[in-house]
Amino acid sequence: MVSVIIPVYNVEKYLNQCVESVLKLKSDFEIVLVDDGSTDKSGELCDSLAQKDSRIKVIHKENGGLSSARNAGIENASGEYLMFLDSDDFLNPEETDLFLSNSDKSPLLLGLYNLFFEERKEYVKENCDSFLNMSGLINIDDFLSRVPFSSESCYMIACRFAVNRGFVLNNGLFFTQGIYHEDEEWTQRLLSCSKNIFVTHNYFYNYRQAREGAITSTVKPKHIFDIFKIIDNAKKLISAPDLSTVKKEYLLSRLASLYLNNLIHYYSLPKAERKKAKKLLLENQKLCTKKLQGKFGTPVKISLTLFGISLTCRLLNLAHLILK
Image (cartoon, rainbow, N blue to C red; front, side, top):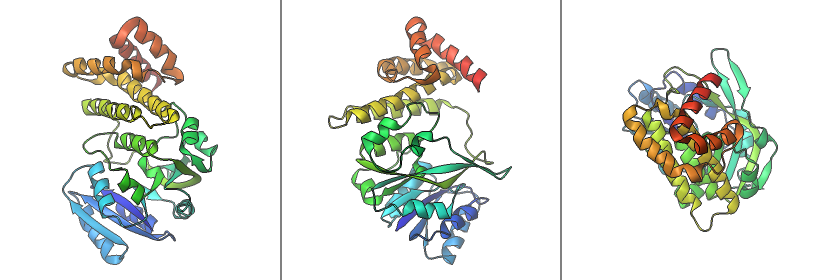
């Protein structure tokens, strides 16, 4: 059985479609709805749905954010496998059944997603050529060596995985609470402790784009400083003596992407915050630029050497605005 964990916060407009997509599965499942202190009628809707189907359980809790809600779901799940479904998204039932039919192959399954544009009712397949060039059971080192270093495709979001619950519990794979980019931090740990992965080409997940009330793309100081926390956690993973060379190289590539993000958005910080951020950029520069690649990679390395942090950040910010 798979436990589909659905964090719920002020999504009464979308929750029915989300839950109904799971109820159409032929696979054995339970739904764990975690009402994370909703202030609309989402909590009542959760209870109403559970009254209609015994496969739905509801947890009501004080608002703690996405990570807190997912963790509550993990703690209350009883399925052999766990899946994470955001409550404004929904599954493709037939593709999900095919995806889950491989659950005896590995503790970790990977699938694909569609971008769903509600206004024009359009589904667009994600940019994931590297995943499409792999399939079946793959050693994790082989898998990671073939994942692109750039962050422009093959995004590691939690919702693309199904994970054995015992594996999650034994490796302490709970989500870090109170930070943005929680998927980035969680998937680093997930992949670092995995031995193999089963890759499918099932577009089982529909990822809603630009919904009303969703978290915006505005970069806040917390986004930037949380990325520094994720960098610190990744550095701890890299320093583990039993971590394979390939895993270390992969984590370094992730560090480079995170570091580049903070270089680009440095000037979005208030002046009072820049001194602290610059200090952290300098502290992490040597390690985090080792795997800088893509269109910005070499130019950024040269600019940092010739002009330093501040001017490089200014140039990157301008380039980002022009290319946006």
